[in-house]
Structures are given as C-alpha cells and as structure tokens.
Amino acid sequence: MSSEGNGNPICPNGHRQTVAATRFCIFCGVAIVQAAQPPVPPPVVQHPVPPPQQFQQQPQPMPPPPVYQHAPQPSCKTCGGFGSGLANAKVMCPECRWLRPLVPGYRVDSSAFAWAADAKAMAALRAITPLNAAAKGVSEKVGRRWIEVTFNGVLLGEKQMPQVFGQAVRAARILGMTHMPDVYLSGERPWDMLTFGSDTDSFIVIGSALAGNFQGIDMFYLLAREIGHCKAGHALWKTVIRFFLGEQGPARGVMAGGIFNAILSPSALIGGAIEMPLLAWARQAEITADRAGLLAVGSEEIARRVLMAWSLKSSLMYRQLNMDAWIEQQSVDDGDMLRLSELTTTSTPYLGPRLKLLSHYAKSPELQSYLKIIGETIKKAAPPKQDADAKPKPNELKLRCSTCSAPMRVPMSVLEGKQQLSVKCPDEKCGKATVIRKNPKPADAKAKEVNRMENQNYAE
Image 1 (cartoon, rainbow, N blue to C red):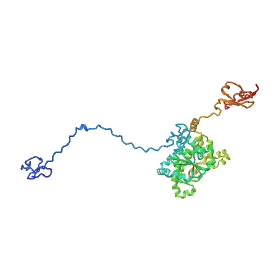
Image 2 (cartoon, helix red, strand yellow):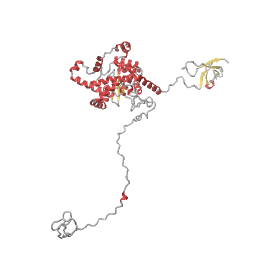
Image 3 (cartoon, rainbow, N blue to C red):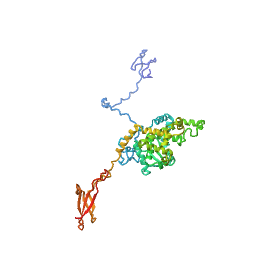
C-alpha cells in the first residue's frame, strides 16, 4: 500500500481510495495495510478572537473628489488688483496700471463705436486657423518686446510728458478701459500713431511729428482713436501685420510694385492670399478707431479737422485749405476705380469715403445717446465746483483810521444789520471817528458775496 498523490491510501492492486479512512479497497476488496502516520505537530495555541461586532467600524463618508484649480494669479501689491488699496486721489495704479472708472460701475462696450465691417473682416481673419495660431504665438512670445526695441520709444508717464500722458489716461477712462496701455513716443515713424501688443496687453506708439503738430483737444482725439484700437481688440492683428507684412505705408499692398509686377510675379499673387485679408481688415479697423475718437471728443468738426491735417501731414497747410471746395471735390464718386485702388494699394482707407462714414456716425441717434450718457457721467465724476465768490466771511473787519492811519479791527457781528457804523480811533492822540458804510449789493450774480466796506472820515 502506498499513499502518493493526494494522501489517500492505494490498495496492492493500485486502486486509489476516494476515502482516506478505509481498511478494504472499495474497488476490489483487498485489505489495505495502513502506513505509519507522520507525527502530528502540537496544536498551535491561538488567542481567542473577539466577537466580530467589537471590530465593526462605523461607515465613514467618502471624501469629496479633488478639485483641480489654476494657481491664483499674484495680486497687485499696490492696489490689490482692483484698486481697493489705491488712494482716492489716484486714478491709475503705477504697478498694474489699473484704471479707476469715471464713476463706480461705469462701462463702455466696444459695440458703442465698432464698425460692422470691422467685425466681419476680423471674423474672416480668425477663420484662417494657421494664421490665427501664428498671430497669437508671435504676439505673446516675441511681439511686444521686439517692437518696443525697434521703435526706440520713450515711455510716457506722470514724470515724462505728463501733458500728453494725462490726455491718454482721460481718453482711456472715457472709453471704459480697465487698465491703461503703455504709451511711447518715438521718432522712427514720426507721422504715425500705432497700436501693438495682444488682446490682454497692448501699447501705443506716438510719432514725434504728430506730438509736435497736434496738441490739446486734437491730440486727445488721436489718443482716443488708439485707445479705441486697444478696446476693440485690434492690437493683436496690428502686431501680425507688422510682423508678416513689414512697414505699412501709402504704397503698401499687392500692387505696390505696379500692376505688371502683380500680374507677372506669382509670388506677389501667392503672398496676396494672406496679405489681402489683413489689409482689408486694417482699413475697416481704422473706421472703428475714427468712431472711438469721435465718441470720446464729441465733435465731428474736431475729428474732421484732425484727420484732414493728419492726411496732409501739416496742421499749417490745413489752416490754409478751402474746406468747402475740398468737400465739393469729394462729392464726386469715382466708383469702382476708387474702391479697387484702395483694395490693392493701402492699409488705410481713403480720406473722402472715410469722412463720409464718420459724418454718418456723427448724425446717428446711437451716438447722440452715448454722448449724453458720457456727458452726464463726466459731470457726476467731476469734483464739486468751488465757487470763487463763496469765500468764508471774515470774523472781523480790518481797516485804518482815515486820519492817522492807525490800525483798527471791528467784529463783523457789530456790523451785522447796520448800513453804517462810526468807529473811534483807538489812538488817544487822534480820537477821530471813521464812518463805515456798506456798499449796495452789486447786480452781477458773480459779484463777491462779502461786500467791500468804505471808510469815510469826519470830524466829531
């Protein structure tokens, strides 16, 4: 008998038993000799296991799934990021360039001045996916710094040409900008006013010739135009044009080298596939900027004057023009030829059609409504007007004796309700009396509230 395998005994005939404890084979009946059993190890003493209920734990609530959040942006150390830590007298944070609105809650949407064709042309640009991706990459990575260095600009501020920078801040607040774009002065493009940057970080470059020829309200209009570019989101595509097409000027375009060059040069036509949409948008964007400037300045005459003088590159020559004759000249519509020339040669709209569109906007009821709201807001935002005539009344009247010129002081309470008063000189050697008479109140509403007193000497 053996017990290989699973440990059950096997009879001499080789039958494995299915039952371990048997003395005879269940298959052939042969007696099975039991093998010696291995020693049984001593039992392992185990500690009693406590009842299961003692180890049951109360069900714990499942922890909420983790919520992944972007790292918080560092707030401005000067104003807290929203002007809360800025002194009331300050309108701009010097660190983050946050702008205080004209009144709490004041906002201006870009739709107030946006030109419909501008939005349509920009949508066409955004539909060109490779161009749109390249535009953002160029602007965010190298655009701003490269252009700043290229223009050799002088950054304006409270200590650098504050008379110009202050006008830019005023224009930005009127147009509802939340942050102030940087403003540079440059001599590289003396007759240009340019906007570059990205949708969230834009800056303006003022040409030195413009700064020298336009001051006051005229410069304010030019600055408001560029703020309009920033507000409308033009800075990104202005930067794209600068990078992809280079310098922009009156002769820049597909046909800049002449019509035969455009026809005979395949590269010109291939380049035009990208250039044409960009230039088409650039022309429409200028109309939006013109309207933004008009919304800020509130006068078509000022806008027309600045655009005309800017086109001539001389404010002096503008003053010598016969505007009636020029308007009559522009009334002649050159039709398709004018539009074709503008389409293929320039990124700036021609002045005649441009001023016509500006005039339509100036007469629109929408603009008049916006101007009324802005005007009322500016009045609310203005500090209380100090009446120069409403000065605090003095507690006493100072005068001199009409005889010996000895100084005398008379309390105003003594003069109250009296048309005249006799005052004796305090010098015992003189002893003369001076009669004080009150002048009748002047009819002019702006006259001083405190009337002058008149001295009259008489002998006692």
